[in-house]
Amino acid sequence: MRYITLLAVLGFLLTGCSMSNTFGDKTEKQTESKELSTKEKQKAILEYINKDVKKVSDLETEAYNSLLSVSGENFTDDNTMLAEIDNKVLPAYEKAVKEAKNLKPKIKELEEPTQQIVKTTETFLEALRLQKEALEKQDKQLMEEANKKMLEHQSLLEKYHAEMEKLTKKYNVNYEPNRMN
Image (cartoon, rainbow, N blue to C red):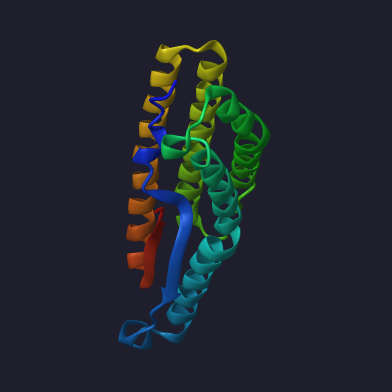
């Protein structure tokens, strides 16, 4: 099943982001109690992205790189790919889903993005499982379903990043998703 192109669609990871505070005149003009609240929310957002969600991102990266090592230009045969998916990709991504489900946002504004992370990682895991089954059964239709799930994952991922961009803009925090090469 050489036509596995599912990863070509992935342009960036779910959670890997570069963020920094930008406290400007806006916060200086607010009342002291309001400023503390805004700073606390900025801190919660930064901690959420750079610490909490980073765990999910690191596991995603591990799984993604492992899959890339046996797909696309690196594809050699179905058995090699199946072994990599079984031994490295699925275990890493199952850990990523578990980490996503364990995220505990510290502010209400991060609850929706957290739900998006869970749904996005679950969708990618479902695609990987379909891909494994397709390889085992040599079923092109199942592989097409896996590729469709990858496209669904990409759409969910874009929605997550859009939501985070909106949230971080509201709290005057710079946000740039890391792009995969």
